Length: 71
Image (cartoon, rainbow, N blue to C red; front, side, top):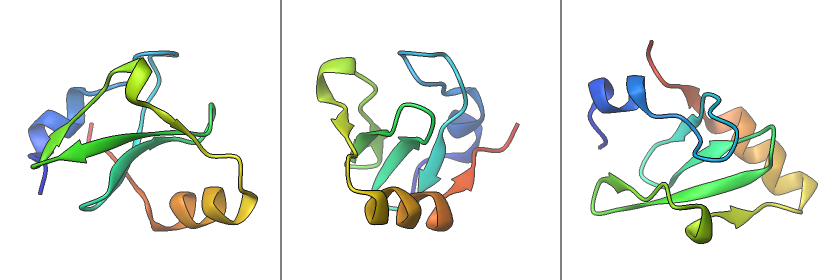
């Protein structure tokens, strides 16, 4: 579980916008359709590590299961 205080300050390194937290899985930017992995409860916010989500069903799943980081 990623610390909620940490989640409140994290933004996408590409567009500097908010990310959706997908518990135990990733941080997701629905605007750019890219996901950033979480490894050992540490978000990996490196542009080179982002995975583009091209599948519409996967995008919908991530958007519907994600929660906005607390602000």
